[in-house]
Amino acid sequence: MARRTKIYEGKAKIMYEGPEPGTIVQYFKDDATAFNAEKKAVIEGKGVLNNRLSEYFMTGLNLVGVPTHFIRRLNMREQLVRSCEIIPLEVIVRNFAAGSLSKRLGIEEGTQLPRPIVEYCYKDDALGDPLVSEEHIAAFGWASPQDMDDVLSLALRVNDFLTGVMYGVGIRVVDFKIEIGRVYDGDFQRLIVADEISPDSCRLWDIETGQKLDKDVFRRDLGSLTDAYSEVARRLGVMPKNTQVTKPTLIN
Ligand code: UDP
Image (cartoon, rainbow, N blue to C red):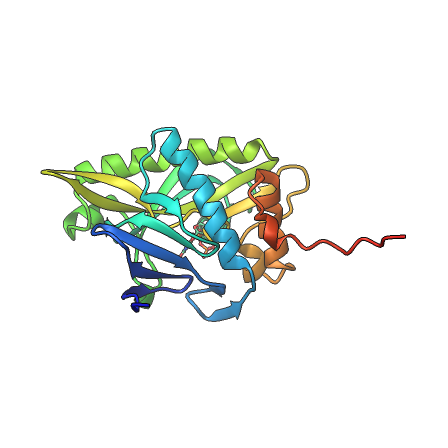
């Protein structure tokens, strides 16, 4: 069998050249990293869960008219996506204070924000993905002001979709990160949601108990990350059947 061409290996995913021009195969690894890769672990099953969950969210977004890079899932760990030029920004949407916002502004974690807040960080591991303003983005040419109008609109539409879907299964979307890519259709360019949407890139709290069901379980040593992600998958009905562990039944 021909060897695939690796395009890029990141902390949680590997990208391979896809079967047709303009496509990429996105492989989800079991590696977990936090604090700019200072904390690392391999968490068995995480890649499988994130592949399924990202498929679920991206498919839903495509169906409600929010364009994404997702084409189809190929197998347990891989999905076919449209290749795009990634805008070098982490687009963060926050509904409740947590993490770096709480630290930066001294707002208690869990405080509801007056309205969703969208923030941008410049994607650069060596710099620790610093927070930047639209002034920096325009001045350094990372995206045009017109692009940023579309980025904001996409971010808020993803937020409305995610918060609604997760509310339906008793989960609060505290915040999340997305990445946006540029694609060309003939002479026209448009922006689409890229990368992944999974509990690795969201803060998800149980609405009743406040239990954390996202990567903070790993960052803050709060228990089993696969149990948390499996719970999200189970509630959404996307638990892959063949990874469910069932006890043998005794036959009398
Ligand atoms: N996030 C992410 N990748 C990053 C930074 C943040 O997916 O490199 C997500 C994170 O999981 C959370 C949201 O973006 O859902 C906001 O993160 P925050 O700025 O609070 O940073 P943190 O406290 O995670 O360092």
